[in-house]
Image (cartoon, rainbow, N blue to C red; front, side, top):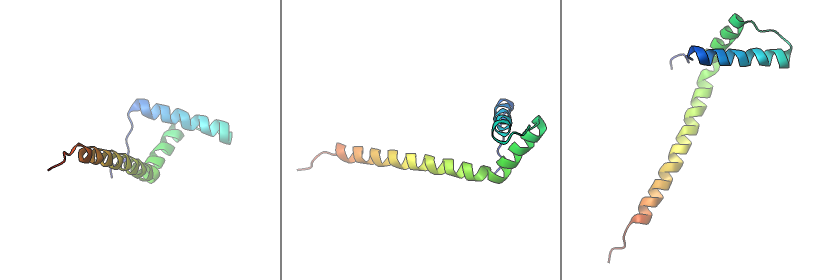
Amino acid sequence: MDDIKFDPQQTEQIVTKLQRYFSTELDLELEQFDAEFLLQFIGKELGAYFYNKGLQDARAIFENRLETIDEDIYAAEKDVL
């Protein structure tokens, strides 16, 4: 899997959230560079877990929809005499 990349706006939003979390929950000031470095680390080391979970969730939705379509197709069948 390739590294997870965010566009500059997404990166800024995530960095702001990291800084806010560190400030309010840990009473630590996280500088811009450190927050971006932390984001890169999280993406590289943990990103695959989140990515795979998203794929599993999407697969479950797809399978559910496929099951519904299959039921609809069977329901549309005509009786043969």
